[in-house]
Amino acid sequence: MDSLFNYINKYASTLMSEEDFEVIQRHFIQKRIRKKQYLLAEGEICKYFAFIVKGAMRKYCIDEKGVEHTVDLYIENWWAGDRESFVMSTPSAYNIDAWEDCEVLLISREDTLKLCQQCPAFNELLLKLDERNNIATQKRITSSISFTAEKRYQRFVQDHPYFVQRFPQHIIASYLGITKDTLSRVRKKALSK
Amino acid sequence: MDSLFNYINKYASTLMSEEDFEVIQRHFIQKRIRKKQYLLAEGEICKYFAFIVKGAMRKYCIDEKGVEHTVDLYIENWWAGDRESFVMSTPSAYNIDAWEDCEVLLISREDTLKLCQQCPAFNELLLKLDERNNIATQKRITSSISFTAEKRYQRFVQDHPYFVQRFPQHIIASYLGITKDTLSRVRKKALSK
DNA sequence: CGATTCTTTGAAAACAGTCAATCTGTGTGG
DNA sequence: CCACACAGATTGACTGTTTTCAAAGAATCG
Image 1 (spheres, rainbow over the protein chains, first blue to last red):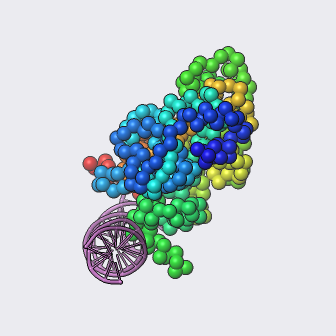
Image 2: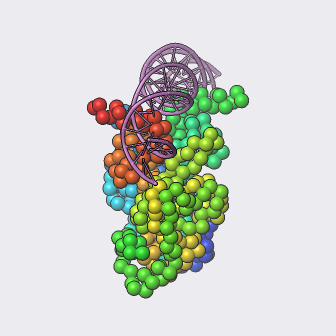
Image 3: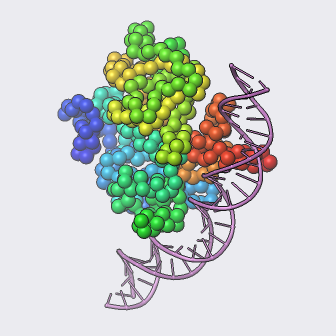
């Protein structure tokens, strides 16, 4: 739980009371998810959002040809889940599985709403989180419509070195919207410069 | 102002009091922006977010070759602005200009935060807004990494027919991350089916 | 009508995807 | 310690898609 509290204190402007800590703690469920196991499978409803205490996960969808497309990557101190399914209680189009053994803290939609009411610091946290998320996805969209594969990879390495260390190239290629073969060639070209 | 209040009532779960209306109203600035004029120019800090009462705007950036990349399109009942610049007070990488004559309601960052404190309905509105935004951008990313130009355009027409009516093809092409030439050919191919 | 903006088209070039084979490193069990 | 399987990375030859550039056709507006 500690890492969640550190995280909240980092993002909220006012420090939380002991009481707040207690309330928040009660609404989260601790869980371990082993490598290759699922937090969410396509077709399921995303009942919980997961705060990642330890480990790495990825979100992906599968197209009609059976090809996986990595939509998001997550490591410690990030939130994993499908917002659409979580909020609207609709079947998810995504899979989220553990790339490394994970420790996560789960919270349900109802508890999220309750905590927002009861605890201003938590409400503030969610606002900031969405803010950050919006900023990040905006950048990713800009990158994907503006740049070639080569530049997208350059930027990715710059902006997310921690992902480069922890996920294999074919996953990163998929995240960037290119094939593993193309990424391999892009890297080779970059080396020779 | 009416359209803003309708909008808020639509998204907030609790109806607002007369008092709330007053408070909110005081924090917005009415403005007209004529076609081709800027709400935000690259390098400026985004001082205001704009709720669009009437008209259409677009957000774009310009790459080193001078090519414009349309990052977002906005029409009535949407919010236009650069979140990153707005929140962090950093120079924006984007331009936002009016594609049609616009009437907008502007609000500053400070007033946004104030209103969140003072008025729960407004706070709730922002949460839902970000939620919606996150869901929409997630879909756009999935689309851009998973689909070919042709499918992206199909989906776009399906999901955003109102944009197709109000923006020319070369803007939509840019939004989809393809050239106007390619979009023209994609459309031709689709017709012949 | 003239000016501007938008769209279409053709041909060549650049770019990215596909598929299959090979190479690399890692870890497991005999 | 070796043999093997397994997951990942690289490469070549080929195919297909998208861009580029320039030119020509609509459409719109004052």
